[in-house]
Image (tube, rainbow, N blue to C red; front, top):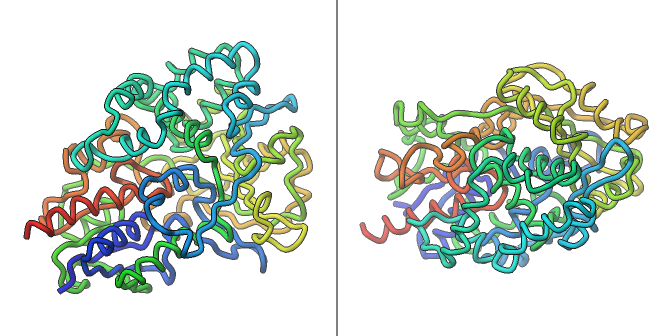
Length: 469
């Protein structure tokens, strides 16, 4: 009998398996797709030689993850590549605000009236970032806070809506860039704890940047899988699990799946009936004949580029997708251009690029024209660079990754109490009513992103139980 079986070979499932194997437990992973990866895959979606990331491409939480930093993933081929600028946010007048490694450079891009306010915002937390990141990415029941005073101070700043925090700023560049940071998790700007979301992304950039993985996000998953195999674990692909009886006997079962799928497979009935899924995304992967022709200079040097004219436009786009059940006329876009720093991703002189905008949950329309009109506002002539495109709306995104129900790449709405307490109201979010079944996906704290911490935290709960039995 195995000690643990993990269902789903995304970053969280693989991290959970690695953490258990490191502690001497026998582990096997079962994945429905033909390769490991989940939200961290790389595929030729458009033309030969153009390697795209179907989902996550830039990894501020990955390089800052306490779980990943404790593992020897570099020995298994993972190499982080840092663009000159982690992120840029261009404006219609040809200027841009930036999120740079340097706090001073970032603050200067906001203008003199907001530079001081930004420096004062990040100053209390950046020197203590490593400890703070470990504290808020773990639960009190899995690890006691190492710096409870800083964590409490962060909570006072981060728990209110982001619209409260941005009152510190007087001009639009700072407000707009921060609104875009919040929108990475598709949360309404007025939601609980959205200030914390924006602040985490900013601090992560200053601490270690927003890198891409050399060769693509698949490198993250492949490194975890290779390390697991060296630890004695096994990985089985092309193995779809429909019920617990499909799996070999084990003392514990850990699911890197949506709560909906877990309830169906494990027969948990209405355990997660109240779990809410959020807006979907419409994503386009591009093969380009050259770099994106940004009007502003800063985006040409950035790995990630946010697109939204101002904070009001970003807020309107989020409301349209999440509350008004319609596609926005001017969608807020998150774009990543990996080949700016990793030329191996495309043939010589060519580039890969992706962009997505928020749409209602399960939306079946086509956002291509609206998305490209937004790009043309900030990069005139963009369409002329397009060699090929691969589009994916919510149905296609959910088909690629079953965890993204209705196209929700956050694996559950990051709003209301669910922003903090997910997948249900419980002090033990990784446990289920079945004593041998656990959940470790992005539907559990600390939530979405390629960081492995949900898997790390769940593994702690599992190994504590295994040692007691």
